[in-house]
Every structure is written in C-alpha cells, then in structure tokens.
Length: 436
Image 1 (cartoon, rainbow, N blue to C red):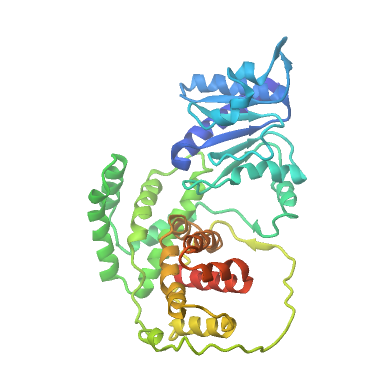
Image 2: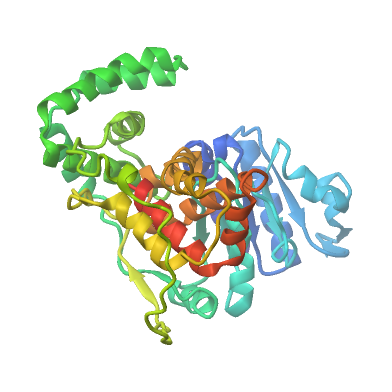
C-alpha cells in the first residue's frame, strides 16, 4: 500500500543522502536535501517515515516538515510547529543548523526559497511547466564549496522536465548517457604512461585520509611531476593531462549516482585531483617574445568598415554526456598572439580616449588574466568540468576582478559596465589567455 511505498522511498532517500551526498562530502559536508511531496498528508507521512528510518540507522540527523495551516493526521490536528517542535518562522534558519538535513515540503519553500546549502532534491510529485522550473531551481543557489547538485525523481520523465525548462533555457540538452566503462579505459591509458605507480597512489591517499598536511603529500606529487616532465614529449603530456582531467570529471559525476563505487577508482580520483593542478603546461617555444614591447599603443584609429545586422538562430544546443575522452590538444603556435590582442583592441576601440594607455594595456594583457586565472572557482571548473561550465565560472571571476579594479581603474570599469562590445571582447580575450 501507500505506507509501504512511502517507507521504501524514504529508505532510498536516506541511504542515498548518507552514502552519496554526505559520504562524498558535498558542500564540505554541509549539504541539505529537500523532499517534494504531493500534499500535506503525504508530507507528514514522509516526515514520519524519514524520521523513523534515521533513528533506525542511528543517524545523527533529523528532518523538518513544512506545510501551511492545520491538518488532521491520525485523528489529531497537527501543524508544522507541533511536529517540528519549534515555530514555523524558524524553519529557514533551523535547516541551516545541525542536526537538520531533510526539509520535507508540501507546496511550501518551492518558490523564492534561497538556501545555498541545498544540494539534493527528492521529487515524489508530478511537476510540469513553470512549477517544475521554480521547484528544481531551488538547487541553483551558489556556495563556494558547491560544485554540483542532484535530483532523484520518482514521478517525472526526463522529457517532461526538459520541456518545462526549454522556454527559459534554450541551451544545454544531454544527448546520451555517460558510460562508466570508459573509466577502465582511461585508467589503463594513464597507467600506461608510468607517470605514477600504484604504491604512490596508495601512499598519498593513506596520508590524505589520515589528515596529513600538504607538505607530506607534495614529495609524492613532485616525484610524479618530474617523471611527467622528463619522460613525456609534448603530445604525451597533453594526452596524459587531458585524460587525467577526464577521469576525475567522469568519476566525480558517476560517484554521485552509482549505488557503489570502485575503491581503486576512488583512490585514483583523489590522487589525480592533487596531481593535475601541479602538472605544468607543455613547454612551447615562446614565439611572441618581444612583440608586446614593439607594439605602438598610441597609434589608435577609428575606421568604420561596415554596418550590418547579425541574427543568431533560435535553436537548442546539444551537448554530449560527461566527456570521457581526454580532450587535450596542442594549439597551433600563435606568432603574434599579444600583438593580435592589441591590434584588435586598437581596431575596435580606438575611439576610446584612455588617461593612461600603458596602464590599460598592462591590465588587459597581464594583470586581469593573472587575477582571473587565480580565481578558485574558475580553477575548479577548468580542472573538473567542461569548457562550457569553465566559461561560466570565468565570466563570473572576470566580473569580480573588474569590480575590484573599480576604485583605481574607473575608466576600465565604466567601459566594461556600459560598453557591451568591449565587455564581450575582453571576456573572450581573457578566457582565451587563461583556459587551458
């Protein structure tokens, strides 16, 4: 009956949350979950089922129920306050505190609720149209340690949810499933390069799990970096680094949904997450040396070449599954990369009169790219996500950098804020300089 089904689903939710959310330290171990139900009766049933199973599991965590008004349940009139043991006005604050980790909702907190710690949503209610968008969007509130979200839906087909979002987000559609078997291939390819040994992986993971300081981990990593530099040619370095990123990205995605994880995959993922940031980019001949100094920044010119209307097609973009291929590549040498940047700047924005031209040049080609490249969220996306998500984090990082420059470089801030063409050009330029 309904009671058995609710109990079974409650067990699935609680087990998943402990093993795949808390067990993987989502949001630094602070993650919260929301349970979406069909109504007050069902919300109360879930609240009791989840609470009982948490006690059976000897879990330290508790649930909160949220609904409006008074409801008769089991012959007794109850409110959310009487069930929770504290006033309704404190629900939003209480869910941020331990021991509360589950928020069971009946048409409440599904719109306008802003909680960055909300990571996982369990849906047992038919959703469609704007209601689906509003409900699932509760998960998209940003947090510095929040790198993904998760939805377990018992009621809705993916096509229905996709159709609900399409009027608002005509962009990303997952074309097919991610193949976990590709992890075997990536692991074999990485081991074939002999950059690291199994013993080094085991040693680092053991130290890491024991809480060792970074200075005890670095000698292991530095030895691997030395092998990477000394034994791999440029193509080998690109392939190894690309496949290492692909492994951590794919494993990170699959670990959040698979009911089991391979211990060797987990250890390798931990190891590579430490190793990849230490791997230098392939050394290439610096063909642009001396070019920047030779560029005449005073020779601005304004020249109207054409007036035209550009229309973008109104169509969805399709992406593949989480990429399991390396994705590394060696860009063609750019003999005049910096000169091209300055020349394009001159051609497109030569009509802007800057108080200190040299300062603007240095900001665009050096200081801004360096600050953006050092942004932790952007670094995380570059290492562990695809190009599209890296670009999103890049644009956010660039905005933060420009805002920080507002006091000392008002001219640049004003152009970035008011001039759409300049903002797009600078964003494209800095992304090209910082994304590897």
